[in-house]
Length: 93
Image (cartoon, rainbow, N blue to C red):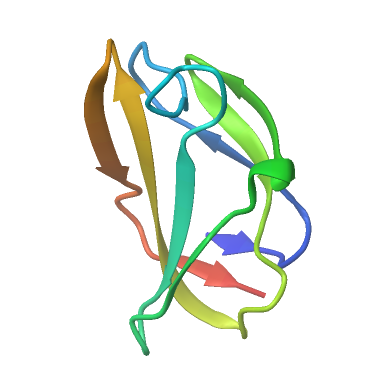
């Protein structure tokens, strides 16, 4: 899966949960991890463009180099923490 740095990205999921923070009044976290170095960076809240119970749209982190990455989301489902990792390695281009 190729994703362009600094461009809008859509992530879809199966399930009935939304990307929300602990208090439910804002977006949860989208974290991108460099598979080579292990460095993680969180997508800024202002770059999360939309959220629903089937996915979200966000601007991919701009300052990572091209390469292989993993994405995980940290959200709250009914007040309980929920951490999910996208099952495939993504390639930033």
